[in-house]
Image (cartoon, rainbow over all chains, first blue to last red; front, side, top):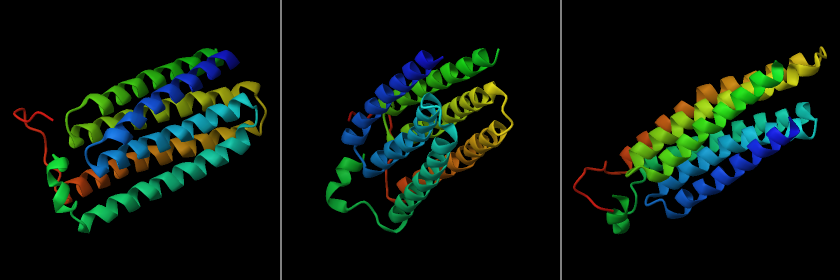
Length: 96
Length: 107
């Protein structure tokens, strides 16, 4: 069971680094925010996996819950920022 | 039995997460990427959290039920907020003037 959890944690870590490619390359800024948000929700799950590996689930579940809350607020704040501020005109072609 | 359920849920969660990642990387424009990220993300998180929650209940201690409930709280929280975030980001993207992809354009 531990091996399975280790393997699933490792696979998730590899997939999260794959998402970093989209964070780096994403044409628009909001692509980067979406990818960062996705990495955030995945970190929540990874925290609970690590908790069950270290057999201290109750502690890590609190970390995961807090992290999920903060990640949500961060993404909403970033989204709110773009409501009023148009992406600056000079890199409009990049927006496509 | 409990191991089987837990392993099945976590494996399924990873499959959906892989789908979401491929969707995020391969889709042509912002709107399709947000759609892939939002849906795949939510489902895989909920599946994996449920699998891990079942794993917590394995030892049968009474205190573990509270931990299981807390994990389910995270599950419900992700279920409620991930679509909201996706909606907010898509709306922000539209407001910021991101143009949807049409077949003619080549990035």
